[in-house]
Image (cartoon, rainbow over all chains, first blue to last red; front, top):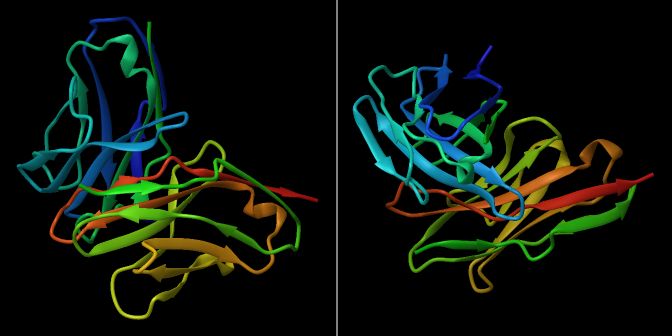
Length: 112
Length: 113
């Protein structure tokens, strides 16, 4: 079954404590991306990757890092989380560039 | 720069009635357009997409959308909605030659029995 798996699904943490949200896909897709969803703002793209070792900023990259060392994994790293990064995060992948097709179930982060 | 506007944040409609969810975009170059659906506590699913060719695009679950270049619109329609269509719907645009996808703010469709 085609899947995009995110972990954790829920996390409550404190300001400044580094965290990583993992994302893995089993479809051998080249294109992967991260979004945050906030009420009234829709989804905003944080970072995307067109292939291994190829990443680029989306619309709201500040405070986030990503890496793409393997095709299947695209972790999102918050080096020093702050309360304004409290949000619902989605990872997505697709076979076509720039067209997110398969989404994970989301990770709800609360930064206190 | 590209942008998407979904003017209606909520659309209530009675079951079996038709519905139209509006989407307008802005871009200085050619575009690719998408509609996604998000059911409660789930990720997004791709409903349909316009890449080129016929301006009337059919998607899953009986939905369709029409690309209107002169009006810069990509409205989503369904002739008869069901309770199970209650969800939030997002329009998205990608300008040709670019990899960024921009989403609208979403429209919550509430189907009333």
